[in-house]
Image 1 (cartoon, rainbow, N blue to C red):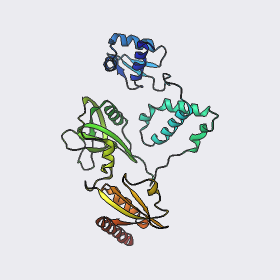
Image 2 (cartoon, one colour):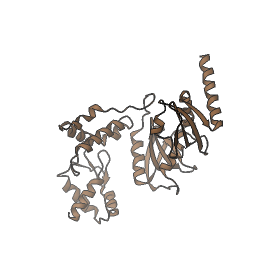
Image 3 (cartoon, rainbow, N blue to C red):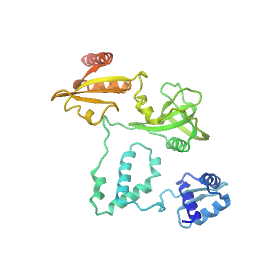
Length: 332
């Protein structure tokens, strides 16, 4: 393939869908980062030529012009979807639809439509798979808080480009919204909320920002300052997402009923979990977990099916919680 053809493909991949646009100035900068040396005038001519064969739109209301793909266009510069890929898109749609605002999903709509068409015209039994699969969340179902689409787009772009962004944010314990500059480090989807993991200018430590509490977002084209030792997976496994009660890990020993808690054998509570069969009715596990509020909620909910063998202080705490709950129930 010629270098010109490679440049065309590279440039087309950089053009966003409408209503977002990219200018020839920005395209020239990004192409240079990809080792393509080309003038803005040449880029403008290339785009005009490509618009004859691809659904490209140009906004001439200001200079430099802004370019975008038609919102609903299917971009045929990648191989046609095969059945497994189409199935993956259908399942992704099932998972993402409840989690993301409609405008965010609209960017994937052409791919979802193409996946649906691919599955519909297949005689293979897998073509019926979307009619046979449903996604149901565990626990009580409820409406997810609405996330501002502009905020989500700003945050995701900042994450991908490793830029800072400004948010108008209302924390639960703040008397009023504040304008903050954040350094995005990751996104965590934890039903029913979406959390931005970030540092905030003027504040210490890594923070969790619930995205539905942000009302405006603006990209700041300045590189983020990433903590040297930060790793998103290590952050999650530290128990930080479970509302930490302390930074000390908890060595937990439980005696669990069969078959009610057999899922703990298949889905361990931690990396170091050890399981010991005791008799036909029970088994024991030992595992290191974070000292979190989630741990307490889970132990309280499973109290009828497990005994807390260690630590004693946690067993006493759960016992006190259950006693208070029973007393309240009696008064109701």
